Length: 309
Image 1 (cartoon, one colour):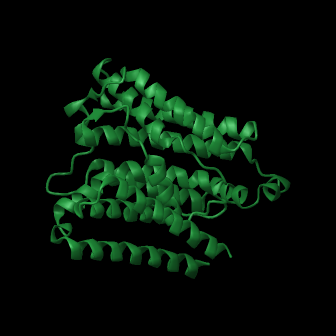
Image 2: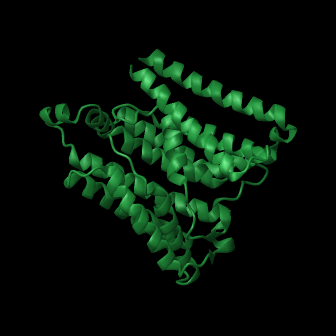
């Protein structure tokens, strides 16, 4: 098993290297600090959501509302900092709590009522997006210098504080999954819920907690997204759920639950972000980028099915 995990990581690393070499051969400018900075600054929000999505999918669930939830939390941050004149710290904390509350609600409704998380999160997707527009009156909130330093690169570097924080969260998520009892419970529940119940494990609370953590990380991702743009857009996060699920599946997390790795999901994030940056530099249209992303998801699902067999 350790050898297989290492082999999977090497495969992901090889795929990432192949993408970099492919686009580097097509565009000389791809091997530049500007491209590296662009990729690094696009990663934090997606990395945070992918970390939380990994935990949810390991339990056998899924959450399609993360894009809309990011839009709503970002809208709330925009209102707090522009209309209410709050500072960054209380706005960030409020976004975390708001995301955790809505994510936990999705998990609680799904788990307690024995409803598919796919359907419940689809409903939350519409609710959160509607709340985003209602919160901002369908207008973009320009925050500016009060939030931009969080997403701005360190002097002389291409990485930002948001990138550093996202990497630390990935490390914490992997530690939780690999070395804490809660992480083992998540894996056991996703692998075989009935066996987990017979073994005396709590199965409802850990699943709800996984959704709440995903919501909290999405709330933090909303702040990072606002810091990168300098504003809060109620349309933010459209398609984020697709990118997050793609990154997690590319990283080897099973759609059926019971197997996954936060670090490998982060590798999936790097692959997706590098692929998107390469397509942009190659002049690909938005529809073509969606086609390629969808093809990557299908390929990753086929690979997961092959591994399971």
